[in-house]
Image 1 (cartoon, rainbow, N blue to C red):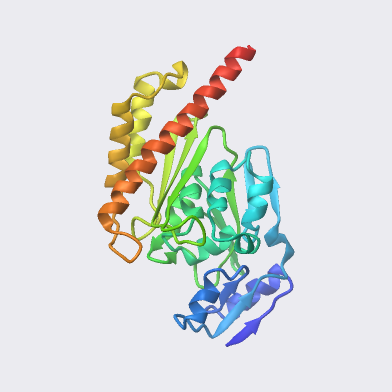
Image 2 (image 1 turned 180 degrees about the vertical axis):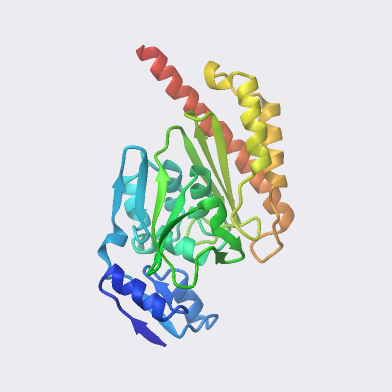
Length: 296
């Protein structure tokens, strides 16, 4: 196994073009596990740790550009207001040591359905910035996951950053695991309210071959909120609406039985998380409305 150590982004792209099978490594959270258990033996490892701008972020007027190697700890400490869903998901990643090293780019590159960042990125409507010597492009998060641990990257492309819209409403993330830390998700759920467009987006992890959105549930809830005037009146969402939303989220799952949980449990748990996160986010939205109205 050869170890490639570029010192600039341009060198990294050139190395990836010359060795398309080279596996990028930054935090190494997933890659080193696969190598240590001999599940993977790449011909080349492409070390990206000396490329400083991958660990930087920019907060713009509407979006956050998050470098692929920004550690989860930095997201938690610095971007909680702008990216609340992703910050909550970052809290659930492994241990403090791994949160200090691992980043969202690694989750995207591995494309495991159990990656903690995926539900939050789906709910927020992120875009993945990728680049090769041929040029750069942005891939909408909905089109990024193409199969079990497969993504839309071309063989010569590397992930440079993730672009996420700054939250304009409450966001939540919930995860079920066999213990409280250092655990792969049995299933996970992300929810984001977007009052600016009067829409809701979801993200489901570890309950289908890829991370997915519950689009039928979103469409139902968007219509229910609009028809009931909930965005304007700030009333409590009725239990029947919450239940139907939860049921549709469960129906969006296509899980498997494995050592961490059964398919039926995953469907049930996703429904419970959907109902709870909807309750939490909507209560936050109502509280924010009351604060604004009280100050007016």
